[in-house]
Image 1 (cartoon, rainbow, N blue to C red):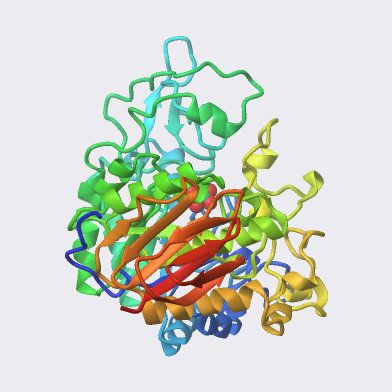
Image 2: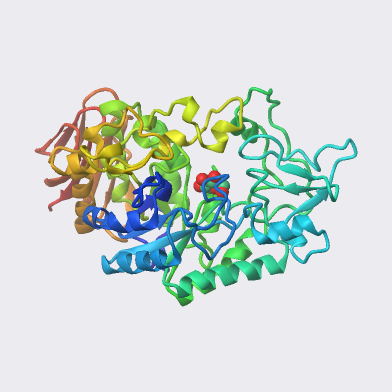
Length: 531
Ligand code: GLC
C-alpha cells in the first residue's frame, strides 16, 4: 500500500529517540538537565537500540518557552553546558554508531535575539524586516483575527512605532518574515554552521507555518468561543487559511534539502497539520526527508481511529512519516490509552504494531519505561500554556517531568539538586531505568526486545497489505513474511493465519498455533510466516 520511497537514506529505517534536554539528566545539581548529563546516559540509548538521538533546543534562551525561544542560533545556553560539551556530544553519539539530530526553530526567535532587539529599537534597522509588522485595525485593535497557539491574539503592539508584531506563539517569540531573502540566507548559514560541526540533521520546529499569506486577511471563524476556552480550543475555532501551510513554504525546504544532501543529513519536519495529504506534500522528493504525522500521536484506543491513522500514514506518508507515540507537547501514549497497566500494555502493543511498518520509529524519553503523564501540582505549573491561561487545558508540564533513572538516588537519579519541575508522586521506583533493567518482565526489556526484533525481521521495502478480513476490532497487516495483528477491542479474538508462523514478539496474552492466533484484549502478535 502506498508508493515506496525512491531516495531512502540511512534514516528511513531508523529508531529515533527524543531527548527533552531540560528533563533528561542533570550533571551539575542545578535541577536542569544538561548536555554532560545526556552524554553520561548515552549508553542507555545505545543499549536500547536507538539510531538517532534528537535533542531539543540547547541554545541561549530566556526560556519563556523553555528554549523554543532562541536568542542565538549557534550558541549553547550555560544552563545546558558549553559549545565544547556540544562537540563532545556529537563525538560521543557517533562513537556509539548513533546520529544526532538537533532542533531548528525557524518560525520565530526569542524577543531577546539581537535581530529582534535591533528591529524593536529602530524601525530603520535592517533587521526590522526580519519580522512581521503591521498597522493596527481601524478600531485600534490588532491587524487581523489570528490567534496565538498559546492563547490570546497573535499580535502585540509596539507602542513606540505604533505597529504590531506577529507571533503565532508567545509575544516573546516574534515570527520571522520568510518573505525576506535575508532571513532565508541567515538560516542557510545556521544550517551550514551545524552541518560543518558534525550534526546529522534537524528536527524542524513548526515546519508548516513559516510563510504567511501576503494579504494578512482574517482567518474564517468556524465557531465562536468564549473567554473560558483553552488556547487550543480558541486556535482550533478558526480555519487557518492564511497563517498555516501557505504556498512558498516548501521552496524554503527545497533549498535546505540541497544543503542537507551535501552532508548526507536528514530533515525531519514538525508538520502539525491534521490532513495526511497536506503533510505528504512536505515529504515529496527534494523537500523534507521525513515528517511526523501528529494524528498518530493523538489517537485514542479505538480500532477505527487507529486504523484510520495507520491507513492515512501508509497512503500519504509512503515511508516518510516517522511513527511517533508521545512527545514533550502531547499526552503520553499510556495516558491517552487509559492509564495504569492497561494504558501501558496498549501503548506497547501499538508501538509494536507500527514498528514493522514503513518509516522510522521515534520514542520519547520514558516511552521505553511505559511512563504515564506525571501529576504536577498546579502551584508548580511552569509551561506558559498552563501559566498564562485561565483554562490551562493543554498544559505540557505532565509530559515534561524529569526522567526517572534510579530507585535509590535523590530525585530518582535525575538531579542531586531541586528539579526545575518536581518529580511527580505517581512516578515511583518501579518506573526507573535501573529498576526495570533488573526486571525481565519490565517495559524496558520488552521495548529492547521489540527493537531487536525490528532490526532482525523488519521487512524492508516489501509492500504492506492490510488485513481486510476478521473481527472489526482487529488491525493487521502482512509485509513480506512478517504478519502483525493487534486486538484493540474488549473481547478475546481468534484470527485465521495463512499458514505456519513463528511468534517473533508479543505483548499481552497471545496463543499462536494451527492456523489461528488467539489474542486477548490489548494484545499484539508479531509473527513470521514460515512457509
Ligand atoms: C513546537 C515545539 C513546542 C514549542 C513550539 C513553539 O511545537 O515542539 O514545544 O512550544 O513549537 O516553538
